[in-house]
Length: 387
Image 1 (cartoon, helix red, strand yellow):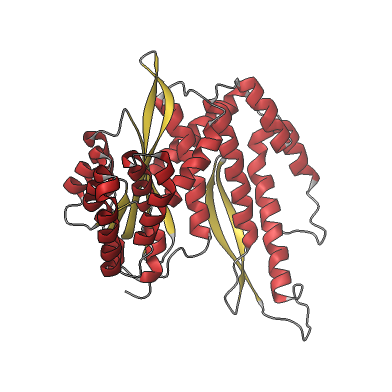
Image 2 (cartoon, helix red, strand yellow; image 1 turned 90 degrees about the horizontal axis):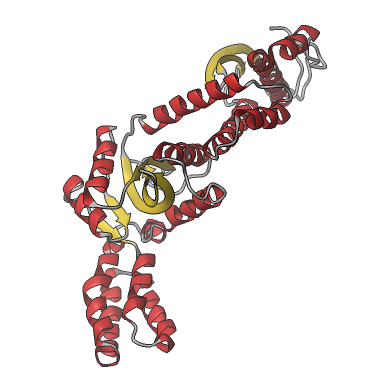
């Protein structure tokens, strides 16, 4: 493919886009992204092709084909190379990120029951070309296939595993019910986070959590050295069954919340919360146990049920002390999954009630896939070091 200096789109491509609609988009996307990458390479080497100048920082070295799957089929891009290495165009990733944003928009409209006519009108504004109802349906089918592939992808070694659940209203058997959305995330060997899986289940009963965790293992998840979660009865039983022997960190945030149920007077809540924070912020487990013993003695008369509860439950939040101090703050709670849950809530609030489980799974999977890709492109979450 040869491009002019000003990167004006050839008339034949515009005519093809006008006559064929969405079917003409692949070549147009290919042209735009290829040209953006070529310009990015020129800026990187600080020289145009065959230009000789002292300020040149490298030498162009041809192109390498890369085929990317998109919602409108596979597109092969010509990725510019630099002889000295170290260059990879961001334009390709930015282009695909925009394409994923459009896919997610389609997913959100699709599960909300928006008519294909309205989806066509909205997509026309986004793409600048009319999209037929059949094309919308085909795109939705491709979306489901893409999400299914993502949910079933092979997993590898996960050092830290974080589990949590949230609820969404779903119409099941003609009745609106609260369906449990089981979520699993983790930290890989390279220190980056990853969304591992999702399951839409009838509840958080042991059999649902166990089936979900077993599916993660079946997909290749291994190497877990710590699991962080709350102590839901079903999750606890499933965790012991599937990950027997793996240390468990009970979420300290949930422990703080649970403790308030045993505080006899509202006026005591702030004081109790502060005492528990002192325990969890201790420099090591030995100091934490000393602070806990003092708190148990303090409340043994003022709030005996609270004292008994603290003595049994608070130590379940101490497991993290056995791990590197630099990791402890991010491993002692499942808060980052809580924040992810809030993002899901923000995106699903407009739906209110999902028409069925598949619609719920579709939209939340699309959201999670987007987030997981952002994790992969983002900063290292934890420095794990070699080995």
